Image 1 (tube, rainbow, N blue to C red):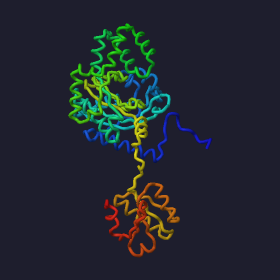
Image 2 (cartoon, rainbow, N blue to C red):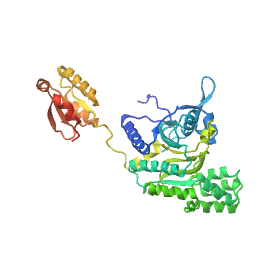
Image 3 (cartoon, rainbow, N blue to C red):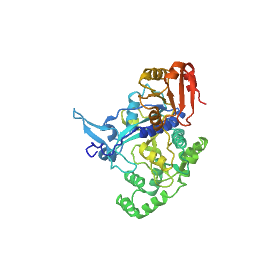
Image 4 (cartoon, helix red, strand yellow):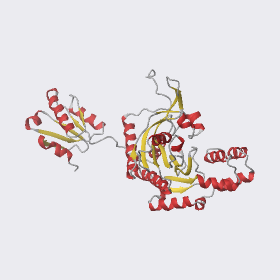
Length: 420
């Protein structure tokens, strides 16, 4: 085994049991998306680097994106996120689309990061956006979708919380403190990193941006004021709407939530595990100008993204991933002997034509066939021996209870379709 070629660093192999977990996750996020009328879409995995250079942030473009030249010498990248692709797609057909759009997607992305717990270089991500509405109601709806997903997978508000803030509110508060316009981007970036840096280092970096000790003290007081949202009409409306949407128990205000991407202009939010172990399970916010930035007419939007790696770690930690994800509805057609193989193959074909999923066994001892079906997590096996063939019957064996029934061949399909 020492000579087996290794996979690329930061990527994962999805064996069937892991793939079943990923498919389960997709079903859960699809339920949340579709419950609010969002439609599925996708874009290419390759984009020009120019698409990200303007608004995705210097760190993402210069340090995290997989950038290379194609054979024509043009710089392209494996997509590190989807929002710029979304806005490009909207701008391309802006006159043909009906707004507001409600779109969602789930697919692969790539970032050149140091692989560690919760971070891989290739990952899958849920993206969901509403484009074309500048209302607080759109922000509330997106948060409600996130809360619906958390509820769908069994995560309670005591386990995971959505923390929200508003960049407009923070911008106004920083102005009151005397932070100049040219200082604000760096200050906001440091606020976004406050929980990632030692206190003395964070203070040092703030002062290096030209802040006074008094301003630094005022910013720290600002970031501890969890009632600050009451000074914002938008935030007050948002929390009122969340009450009406019956998801307010999942949402709290946190003035430290900023989000690092440069394109957010209003509401911003992140989901954190309340035990402090997992941060930024999902994150997003309101953006005003992205469609115009890629050549379209100005259109506002709000959305979020959630990677599969962290959320699966969270669900695993809380024991919320179902243990049995194999499809028990798949039927297992045994082969009694070489002589009856043709009859078993014809039975399997008829069942598939009737819409059933069927695994076909090969001729060997029946006990070994049953053991194989049980290890696959299947619940029903069909036996067609010489006696059954002669009498026009099929034995249906329940692999969980070990009960078995002789069923007339012509009534087999109706019997299998019964749910009792």
